[in-house]
Image (cartoon, rainbow, N blue to C red; front, side, top):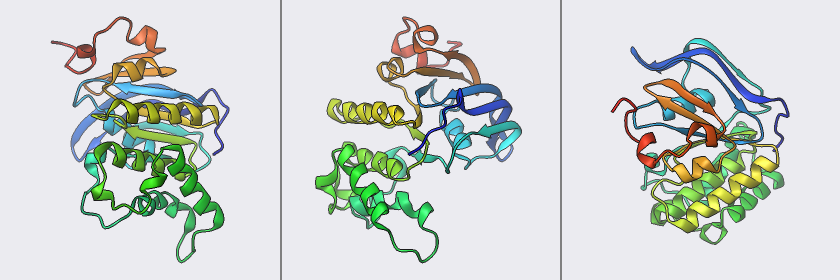
Length: 237
């Protein structure tokens, strides 16, 4: 995975976005620093998931300009609750889906593709689950498989929607360790999270309020001594 060494990986200028006729994000101006973890915080409904979809290119901007400085398409890891339990896939097949965008039609996985899958599973401590059905896994195991799928894509921009939500301490530590490792390798990570501890461990933090940037910068400045409720309830309350 090769990351950009410019000051920012993605720039947004006066960007708005939403669904159909419903606006969600409004006139955002922000920079996503390269080779770093950016934590996106805010109460439910503030636009965190929409921002990730916008950065991933799956949700178009309705106005403004989005500039990506990425070599390949971003990797987008959704919440585990968005992935059906009934999919007849093993853990290895799920991770291997991360290579589909590189294969093209009718091309068989190469040794490089297979190595990317195996390495990603080992990093997330799920290699021993390779032949298990996705629906048989615990929530923490399944989430680590999905993060491994994101890593297997080999993208230089990795987007994660609540990657450690409702997981046990061991799963959280594994994901946090891997995210720290990949930023050292040049990958830019953006994660939406309600975990104030995870946000304070990031290099950069965005605080959303009703689809607008309430604050942006180092977590120590953005979050200060805030208690967890500050970032999980509407700021006007």
